Structures are given as C-alpha cells and as structure tokens.
Figure 1: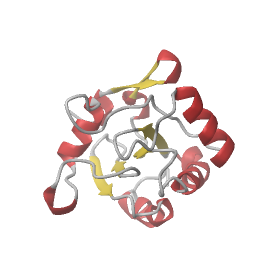
Figure 2: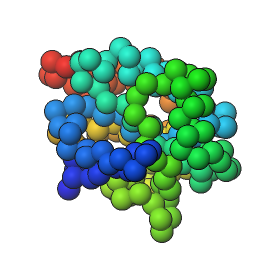
Figure 3: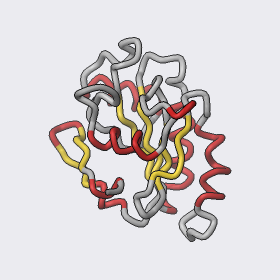
Figure 4: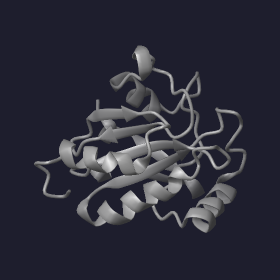
Length: 164
C-alpha cells in the first residue's frame, strides 16, 4: 500500500481519492486553529502558492486530539483558515490521528515513518509528512520544523522531478 491507495473525507461530505495526486509530491499536515504552531498555516500557504502549479499538494487535516485546540466544526475551521491565513490548499474533515479512531491514512503515514526515538504516535499538532510522487512516505517532521525549512528538502527529495 501507499498513500495513493487511500480516500480522504473532505468537508461537505466530499471524498478525495488520493490516487488523483499520482505523480505529485505531497505535504500532509495535522493542524489546529488554537495552537502555538497555528501560524505555520502561513508558511504552508506560501509553499502551496509557490509550488502548486509545479505539482506540490499541501493538505491539512484538522485534529482536536492535542489540548482540544481544534474545537470548531468544519465551517468554523474553514472560515478561520480562510480569513486568518488566506488558506487556499485543501482541508480534510476533522480527524483523529492517534488511537482506535485514527484515520486509516494517518495510521499508514505513522507506520511508514516513525517519529522521535521510533515512536509511531503523533505527539502534537503540525506534524508533517512528506510523500513522493509515487505515494511513498519519505519524511516526517515535528511541529517545530517550520514549513519554510522544508523548501530545501522538497527540492533535494525531488531533484529529478521536473515539477519542482
């Protein structure tokens, strides 16, 4: 299995088939609107605007599992992201990233890239997974890694990719 084998629930009962992103690198991030890392939405949007036309897919997965920092419903989350950070990249429906109700995609991401000291669990909001154009998970970055720091990594990971 790879990331392209999953489907993601979007607001409004829509479904995103991740296979639609074959051939495109992805940055998948669990997010929250009331977190100290929330300003990273700005950096995520910058990456999206700079590289979307070259193939990069940035997608946010709101999650309320860490300090109840994403309490809103899908409309509140969408409005917050749009009005506060002018977010134009896709937002998934609010999910769990850990535990018995964890989203299957996130279970897959965690199984392919362990965190600090081999831990599989997501520790906090704004954990980022980098997925190559073939759907393989190639990187995991903690909340302290700002989106802008990933630009160099994106370029080196896909140096042979004409999209970046």
